[in-house]
Amino acid sequence: MPDLEPFDLDAYLDRIGWQGSRRADLETLRGVHLAHALAIPFENLDSLSGQAPSLATADLLAKMVHGRRGGYCYEHNALLRLSLETLGFQVTPLAGRVVLGAQSPESRPRTHAMWQVTVAGEPQAYLADVGFGSVGALLLPVPLVTGTESEGAGRRHRLVPLPHRGPLELWELQAYDRRKRDWVGQYAFTLEPFAPRDFEVFNWYISTHPRSPFTQRPLLQRATAERHLSLDGFWLTETRADGTVAERELTDEAEVWRVAEEEFGIAVPERLTLPE
Image (cartoon, rainbow, N blue to C red; front, side, top):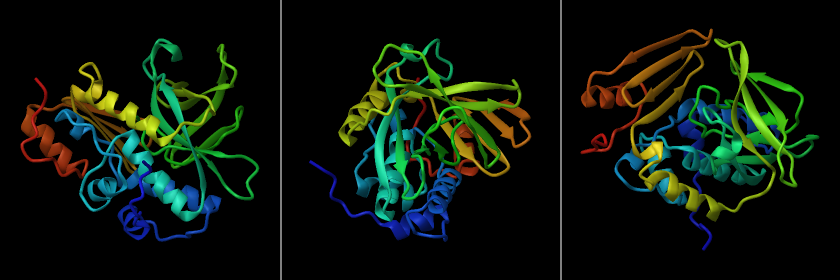
């Protein structure tokens, strides 16, 4: 059954601090996308407790808008889709294979959610994605056009075609790594549309499978205009705007939860413990 819960656009825009236009134009798409990416952290704490996070509208609002929590890709992008559709944009769900750290695109399943957004009066659609937990994640939507670079909010991206055997063109989103001075693949996708129910299946698998990284350790991300913070297990990494990186290992579980609260702005659920 479709999710018929009403979406509170006012509360969402207040949560992300967007006070600009509410027209379904490129300025609004870029502004809302960036504001969301900087305001709401990426986190997988529900998966650590063995439950699949709800993608229902009321639950997303309660957790990420009215509660001091973040979420991972399905939650973030579901919230973004609800806001964009309420604003009047046409949004098409897409699914991609994460290639960051993979041997090849085919070595991983399609488990990442992102959106194709059509903007009236613009010659091309845009790729919108506020839920990729990486320092190479989009902060601004990028045109769905290969062969051009997009730069904004301190990050550079491009889409490149990849050879494959399927009938649709396969694109890879790449981010420029200042340290390596090279482009690094983030995920690969086609423009095949998916249904929201597809992501419910992906969500359950990723958040409950015993070999999923999301069930094994805390994975937190937070972007600001000055830096990107990442917590992977006990390792805290700060990547500054100039590309310099600082890392340190946290001492114990108590420090993990303290950093989650103080550095990432996350209200850690009571009685949450790290997986053994």
